[in-house]
Length: 452
Image (tube, rainbow, N blue to C red):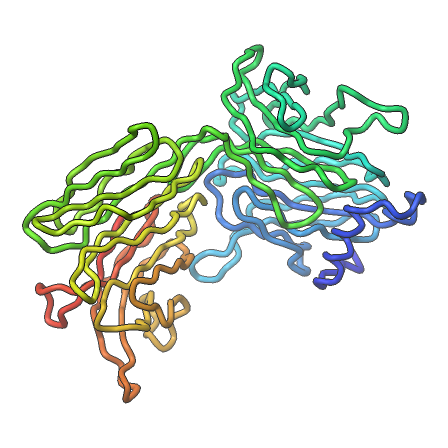
């Protein structure tokens, strides 16, 4: 296979060509062959595709797609693989694909990642004007079929039009209900999508308003959430770029959990108060992490009380289908405080997106190292440098065994060891949180806490 082009300029040109229709010559506009990869396996790692014995062409995490690749027509041998903890390729499958001029091939990964399925879907690209085409598929398990409905923005479900049933691994072009004299394709504009169980008239999923503003082909893929929140239906909209728009149900529940980093003998009383009298109350002992609590999405006021200390004005926003962690701590003035961050919704099977938090007011710019058996902090591949006090930052690690080491460079550039752990397995299918905190129970006065 020859002449694969990957510069940023090329991707930009492809996106522009997908979003405009300045020429009436289809052969000139879409003279090449096109290839794209979408990852729809809910327990997958970041997955790469490459020519067999050739260049890497793209990569995609769960619910994401590679950039659009352009090529000459002809057969190409593709291999799909992940990178393991030893930086070695783990080959998932090899597939031969026949590419044709003017045609796009979308390769979709679905099913169990231990026994993955790579399906090939293709369609002729068209030079559209003021219209778009819409295709649909599902990567939800074989038992999942859903009816898809669509309405113009601002209209209720009762005004929606049925577009058909979406089935696992099936790939269909959908038909517009109101074609005009110029085209049978969908009119550009703003729409809302709904999902129902087959034959039902009660939607369980309603999207936000979606702007179909490009003269191009859209692929709608149904999947479920993974990571911190499980099994919510998500609608992914794939176009001719790596930017996949993800839509959750407008009424989807949110969730949160709380870590009490305080060493007090008394428990902390917590209340999360929302609109219309919604309140979630709990009590949490020292140095403990709560279970996830599901709540209606919205803006909440967090109140925390321990002894004669309290705060009651912390705003916590929980969006649809979102999971947040809330950390309680004392700041440098020894005042009760909190911070929060969103937790990853990616699969935590082969790769782990870990959130690290600096709760040590005595030390700013902590360096945090994940040291494997054959490494030192100077050779460690995975590290987070310059983590400020009250800052949280994420890092993605492959499943492996690591020694966790937190250090601080003083004014003389001398490294001060704050804490280190034993060799630990980062290999559970959970969302990890790691904190660096003050404590009276260690020789250094600091500790690393590993939460999940």
